[in-house]
Length: 234
Image (cartoon, rainbow, N blue to C red; front, side, top):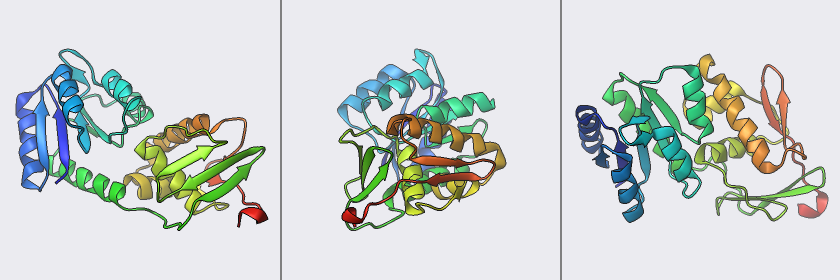
């Protein structure tokens, strides 16, 4: 049973979400402060965090940013902040989804279920590590071990970034549109979310090393993974 932590200071909202999640087969716990949530995470790491942004003892964005530096836990932001800049900020911090209040609890449950389906299934089934080259850099991508290294360095990728790079590598050498990335990696198909893809790509490039062009931008359309294999790697 998946364990979900709901960090929400409005008790009615938190308990309502918890009831819907439990009714859908999840184990869920609610916390009204970041201090309570931090102590609980130290005791038992959840499979997912549903995070409000404005808490009485701190900022949810800052809390998740600090958490992501230490642990890879999927996060859905649940907030009244509706501005596109806030959504972009949430995804820059490694969020897997973002839902704006007021919302339907049923919609949230569907998003949670979709997120776990993505996390529990692999987009590709490479039976051995794949070696790619770009410029003078070498990348080793191992889907089975959920591992990616560049010149022996292992960059930290959020779960959303991992899904995107996997999607691009699966179609290596072929352009993948923003719409396809949204659909395959986030279950989104709305044009307003295109900037979210661009933000994730920017972050991935920085982590892979901007001096080597692993991902090419097809302006106005999408992106292409341009790492190549050498004959001796086959």
